[in-house]
Image 1 (cartoon, rainbow, N blue to C red):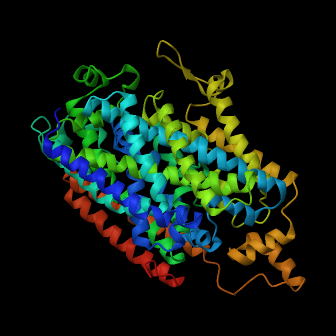
Image 2 (image 1 turned 180 degrees about the vertical axis):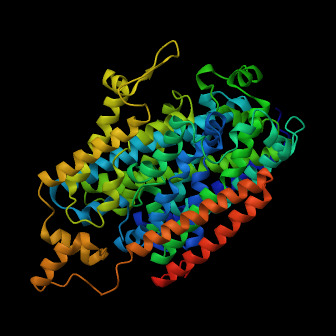
Image 3 (image 1 turned 45 degrees about the vertical axis):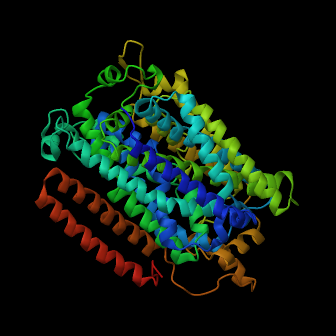
Length: 611
């Protein structure tokens, strides 16, 4: 594969544009931490929505989707499609709560909801745990994808790739802050979407693939097309569909799909002009993220099964790729080498856009934790705003370097996805309920956090886990355990949940003053706060600001209708691409009906998403 002058011009123009944006906004972003991390809390819903979508484009996401589709078919994507429920719960229930909290980071929530040394410890520890450890793992996945793209498409070594990409991204992120990220994401979104759609259109029309109709009928592809796993295969049905939809979406913490909101999604909600703009941004993001954007990647993944039916064929075509980086996820980069001049430059620019958008978001988000929740709280409480911004810029560079080094030792995108999912198992329910149940305290979160770290290690990397859930020996034979292998994740959730519930009842509740202050500021409502409200009323203390009806039941109904809407759009587009026009039309009607009902429900609770 040879890049032409046109390709280089397109790529250079893109990177130059992003650097210019970073430089232009750097002076304003460096004023204070509110500007550097939240752009002054004055962003409109549409700009934040585009930013969320651009951030989750990433370079590792198409690799992850390709890995999933090649091994488990289109249905395998339920492992992340199920997080739509989490996303829409955030839209219709939690977005307004986060915006009302008026915190700088979601970890600052702990100072509102909890009190004393446990709350201080929790905030400081999670700033390191999430801002550094989890953040580095997530960024390493992005760097790993860039390494694979660099090796196959550009002939770069892993070190060369992380150096080039890391330097550009770190300079841009440290200069522009969150405002630079948001503005650049708007440009990156269009570059990335045009590149993804353009690549999929060209690649499925290669002579070897023969267009959509030949692709879906090809013997390597025809058994991978179903939206749902084979119902006669119990193992696949439970692992691919039932666990994600019944357990995973509410029980697991995952970046970008945190139960109850959080992370960089919360950062954008906190940067919104008001509650309605926070809701509009997250709703727009979920529609784009789940309903429309997956299909270009899925089509390329299916086409790759025609061109490179197995890993051996990829290795044969690209013998210079390091053996440690070989995997099904490499097929996406392999397919992109077939692109013509001009389109190749655009796609490489789009991958650079995805790389920079995701990493710049993670860098700004992670450094916000270090600055606002660790340095300012644990190290130097009287630090000036200028000093805090400088600490944020230094942290950005350190995080970038560390994640790049870590990526050099990894193998594939699915590997990291599973690790992050595993270490978040069982934590989600606390993050959902802490807004609506007064009894949850700082020890609830401390216990769930540590149990979620230790239990997966015990059940995955010790002989106990092998005995309970089975394993695959060196000869490739599957050795059965006491329980089926799919029960491992459920066991983690059950044990972790028991730990935090027991810890909650064995420790004292938060102080009366803290609970009343939280309720008065946030107004979460609901039966979980009845005891606190009744006690306050009995003492003549006003903590309820209005008699407004509790909106959570309507919010949950809106979430369910939203899921029908988004999944209907997803499958309607899929059937259209498969040539199943009647089914596409039927599902499209279902999308329209659910959208109409959703609008009615949301209107009934007095919210205008786009105001």
